[in-house]
Image (cartoon, rainbow, N blue to C red; front, side, top):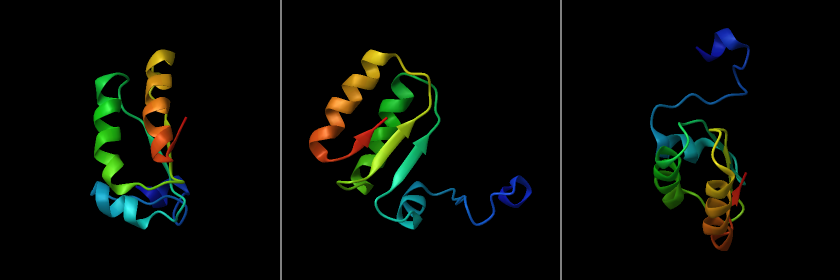
Amino acid sequence: NVKETGLDGKAIPEADLVKFIQTVKRPRSIIIMVKAGKPVDEMIEQLLPHLEAGDAILECGNSLYTDTQRRFDYLQPKGIGYL
């Protein structure tokens, strides 16, 4: 519960991914916390159609550095940051 965390008004809880992305002010910074590996790639592919140049994905899943570099290289030409 967001109210119990003290983040009420600072965090946006939303079960629907598209609605969540639409509620974040541009340029958007989207934090993803999923298991490293294929789940990260799958999440990026779900996010990508709804992001635009200037947005950024911050991945906190302890990915292998070579995967991080590959994803950065994939997103950079689209104007999307990856950290």
